[in-house]
Structure formats: structure tokens, C-alpha cells
Amino acid sequence: MRIRNKIPKCNKEKNALLLGDGWILIKEPKNIIQSIIFSIPLMIFLGFISIYIINLFSPITLADFGVQQHNFSMTINVVDIFIIIIFIYIHEIIHLIFVPNFLNSDNTFLGLTWFGGYAYTEEIITKERYIFIAAMPFLLISVGSILILGPIGYLTPILKFICIINAVASSVDFLNIILISIQVPNKSKIVMNGELSYYKTT
Image (tube, rainbow, N blue to C red; front, side, top):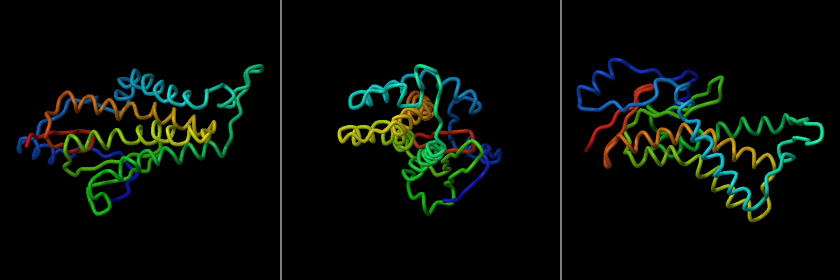
């Protein structure tokens, strides 16, 4: 595993080699902005899933998020902002640790950038593993943590907020899951080359 501070770019030579070796390009949004736009319905859907599960244990109120109803003011806690930033990286680290052999891989990266972070690998992985990696931050943070902390009464306002924000942020991951599920046959392998993804049936 290595650390990067830049978004990975497509290697044109690798692209030609992969296509020549029978890998098929997966149709995806051309950039992160398009991915976010196409993910908006999923943001709403995943956010509501997290809110619904939270409400099973602890109803969400405006006061949970520092909003005072009478004067419409909002309290912003610097410590809470720091915790949210930490969880942005935890989201990416969860992706990372489910990449096979990530610690010893020279083709797996944790990105530290101005917008937060990203996890990225150029290792060849199965379709099933790709979907598993993409889904885990949502399942662990926005579902699993609620089911664990809710029954014992430890869903604090900041944890509720983090679970919801993580669910919304997982929308691009789930857009990728949908694209992979539709385009890639079962038992196929997937590889990344910068912003491009390819598959090959085994």
C-alpha cells in the first residue's frame, strides 16, 4: 500500500495493453462531478434508509443537529467538525482494508487530498469482491453501527449525523455497484486504470 495526494489518472499505454488483452471498458460517468449528479437519487434513498434505522432507536430532531427552532440558529462545534473529517477517512480506510493483500500491494493506494480522501487499487479483483468493497462503508457505518449503538442508547447527535452523511456519501459507491452489476457478468474480474474500469470474463 502507498500514499498518494493526487487523483489517479488513466495510463494510455496500460489502456492499450488491457484492451489488446481482451479487457472490456465499463461504461461509467466521465468524472466525479457527473458521478455525483447521477448519484443524487441514491443519496436520497440511502440517507432515508439510515434515518429510518436511527428512528427505530432514537427519533431524530432538529436539536440533534444544533438547530434551535425558535430563532433558526445553528450551533457548530469545532470538535464535531474534526470528528466528521476523521470519519471521511475511516470510510476510505474501510474500502481499503477489504482489498485483498492491501498492506503488501504496490498497486493499492490511500489518497490524501484537499477534498478528503480516496481508496484505490489497480489489483485485479473479482466482481463479487468489488461489490463487497464498495458496499462495506455504508453497511458498517450507516447500518451496522446504528444496530449496535441504538439498542444501548448511545446514538448521540454527532453519531446520527455521521451515519446519515456517510449514507449520502456512499451514493457514488452504490452507483458503481449498479453499473458493475448491470454490465459485468458473474465470475468476471475487474481492474482499474485511473478513472477507467475494465472487466474480463474468466
